[in-house]
Length: 493
Image 1: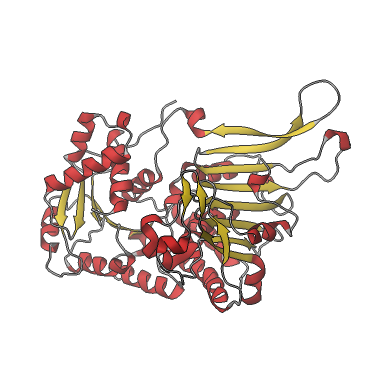
Image 2 (image 1 turned 180 degrees about the horizontal axis):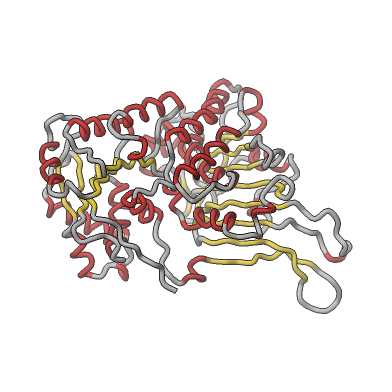
């Protein structure tokens, strides 16, 4: 089976922060793969911008280094790498200096004035405003211009509103693409296909048939090179406010009228607005925040967060577990259990929809205990879908039941390379398809729900709960779900 490749229209992609980790690790490899598959027209250009002085050839050399590091050798055909590098250019631009490089960038872009033009802000959020102002002041916005904004979009509702206002002074809302790479993952999009393209699930997708939902985003690594940013953010801001709430919306939203950007985002917004507020004493009961201590990972002993950070006073959480509820007819009484953290046993992102158990077993005690059916969507690693069912254990000697999965691995089923999230999302920007991007009111609704949790934590007497690196977080996170008579999914396998 081969995937269908549809070429996009000619474009210029201008990457601010072109010498940063995101550009080298994700963006340039993603663009190379789209070039390799013939999706990018010959005249399209990738123009790197940062304040570091560099020639086109020097930047092509660093781009080649990035491809050699982050693209598997068998995918780096020499002639394709060479042709890709020919479409890569570089213009030094100092965002904080009015006359530093902007005129040069305008001159380069004038050559492709009729093409689609996309500005990728792969920089710190404190530069979003000054870059957008520079883009606007130097006449670089055309009717076919888009801007791609990376997270974090603010650290609170107030700061997100200011940031959105700043970007909105230069670009129309329809030109702004707030990127969340989780929404570009194959399994996330397959969640929509499972729900809305099959008669099997949607009739059961409600409180009458679903017992609870779990969303887990686990990372085995610590803060690594992101320590400076992470200590000002924490797990709730870094993961829950954006990635995880977006996943929750896709699970919980009503069917949109069509698979179109605003129809999709309208339904996600309804979910965010229906989330039951978590405030004051409620936060103590339905949220857990933790911070990892020294422990062990697959690579051996690892330091604790405070040692990695070099700040023994930090109160930043590296783990969050919480119980969310959606106050509408479809989901009333169905808890959504969320957990995310660093230095957990493995890298894992998955959504588990656990259906209610059957009301009565006809098989007797000898058949064994009946477990609930579960739909498990694995986002990473090994993208795929599992449907856990009860079946008869083969063999003579009576009825014995087992809980086993129907397993569909995307890699094994389709036998094609699955594009990385950034590949899909960048091409969607060029197409003008905003379906997988966040609208301003979504971002602000998410902060409106998260802010009271942060305020409650600030006022709480109880602080962070420590957990040993390499474990599944504080014991309180297990108590959070088990006092409801449920358990986290990995303990069921």
